[in-house]
Length: 399
Image (cartoon, rainbow, N blue to C red):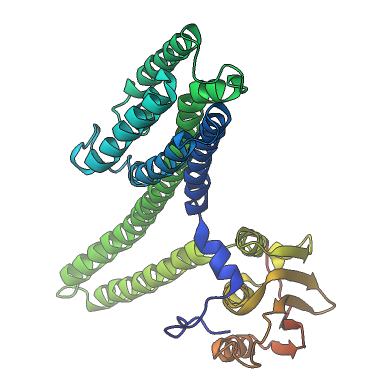
């Protein structure tokens, strides 16, 4: 149950792999959705081109050109991922190639199909993918949608490229493509903004906690140091006239030093102690976030268990499950027996895992539990690994 980093080249456990995905998966869903929109539209127009002009090369021109256009929009979509880190505005130099490909495809496809709508669509799609300043994208989407609608009206008035081939579907899809694209990108903006707000809130909470600790330490030490300074000053004044009274002040100062040290220890313990119910809840949430099916059985009086003994054990064993478990299931149990507390954590075993690969972490847990007059039991099965820890019950008040 080691807390050391895995060896170089070692394959991470399934739980660690799932935990590392984070919000990155949301981006891939967003980017792939936009690509599917574009590919579907290209497929529609290619099918229409083949239906209207069977036996000609128009369908090949639209299909191959459409695939090249979709490929050209990939770097534009990829650049959008970091738009919140970039300066507002469009950087046109990196967009030279995608812009040329979009314009070329629009002119070529629009010419061979005699469709203004298909000619305008690639450029309109490229425009809505760019990193516009705040407020510009909404006006741009409205403008290009109106422009596409006008192009569709012109096509329909002039006979259109597809009067008898079910042209309504690709036309409607083309008209709503900017809205669908921007909706997907807007959803990504919302998620990434919420994620950054969560991170900022965590940093703010940590800063406030550090400030609170600093304030408590200042108040505690400032009070004791001021008392000690006064007692030493008084002893210095009394020594020449009344040595015994001076010695009493020195002894009082030494007592104040002991009080200051004990107060510091109590303050540190107060900040370091976490109720076991919170420790177990954090362990459960962490395992569930890693994709495991977690079963818990926690006693109602769990906060009375010795947190100083079991808290580090819970954190260590949870880390062990993420690093070395099979990544599918886990079980947490904390129960009170007649004269002891029993903590048990079980997890599935990764296929092909070697016995004993959990490392030296169990030795540290064993030493910690032995100091608390407890016991450690490790059960290794073919498909399950279980750690059982028991510590004597003490008279502890709930935190």
